[in-house]
Image 1: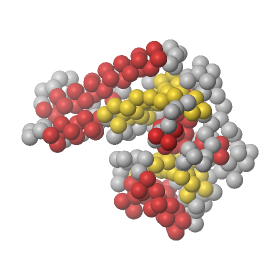
Image 2 (image 1 turned 180 degrees about the vertical axis):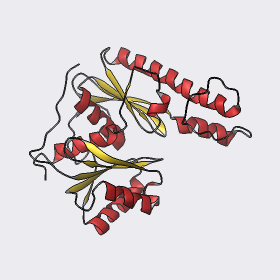
Image 3 (image 1 turned 90 degrees about the vertical axis):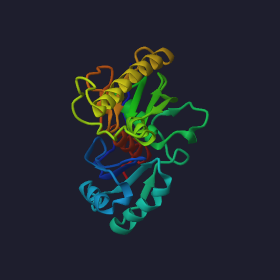
Image 4 (image 1 turned 180 degrees about the horizontal axis):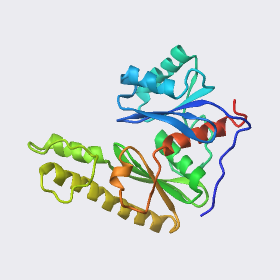
Length: 264
């Protein structure tokens, strides 16, 4: 595996980084090399109090800039309004058409690539070199691959844990909504435990199969890392993936660096 150094800035910066997903939003502080003060905001922009608290924690009042990666375009202007009205910041929105990426793109229709997937791939290359692949455990379970040449080539999309268990709850008369946290039960001795076992073991098996497929198609030495709210729970006991909860925001910060090499 070859290593890749990302753009280092000439002086420290303070940037608010925001990742807007379908079921959750994460906000953090980027200093040019690392992301800290990460706060999950379950309601996203709909919970203005939680969003404001997270922005304050990320240093929005004194930040030099703010950047957002979003898979919910309808919320982008609301985030821009908050940053503009409350903190006097112009919010940059990750857009492959107007921003530089530190990785190449070898994909038939780049506009189809979700902003979070671009951040994941960028962050993974910056940390681990190439070839590399990222599993992101959100509403969907996505795998994104960067080849030996440092180009994003595509990936795999599968139903995520909340979709799997939520669909069972919604489409059956007696299966409950289950909490996807806590210790894996020893046996399915209740409906809830049976569903938790099915979700966790099923996803672990799916991850192993997908990893094997990607290594066959890409390169055997492809490094795997995982991020997303359900990654640690789903992959407990699996050694094939490095679990990195901050990867998406880290990748967004790396993209900010690439577009502001002078730190301004």
